[in-house]
Image (tube, rainbow, N blue to C red; front, side):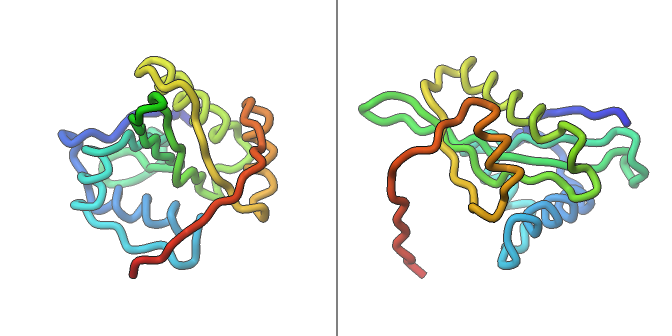
Length: 152
C-alpha cells in the first residue's frame, strides 16, 4: 500500500470518486453528514486546508482512493493566529495502520510552517481511539465548555 498526503487546492481536479470517498469519510463522523458537492470542496479548499490521504494502489478509475481526511481551519484574531482541526476521519478499512497519526503529524507540521501558534479540536467522547491519539500527539484536554447556537 502506497499512501500520499496532500492538500486539496482550488486548482485540484475533483472527480465523482473523490466526492464519494469524502462522503463515506464524513459518514464515519456523523449519521447526519451532509451530501458533499464539488462546490463544497472548492469552498473549503479556498477558505481552509483540506488534507487528504490517498491509497495510490487502490483500484479506482483514476488510480487512487481517498482513505482519510482532515481540515485545518486557520483563524487570525487580535490574540494571534491559531487553527481548528475539523472533520478528522479514516475509512474503517484503513484504521489501525497509523494513518491518522501520520495525517495529524502532517497537519501539525503544516500549521507550524504557516505560523499557527496552537491548534484546537473537538472529538466526541465515544471516539475513544481518536481521543487517545490526540493525547498521544500532545493535545491537552481543556477545561472549557463548548456552546452551539443553531441558526437553521
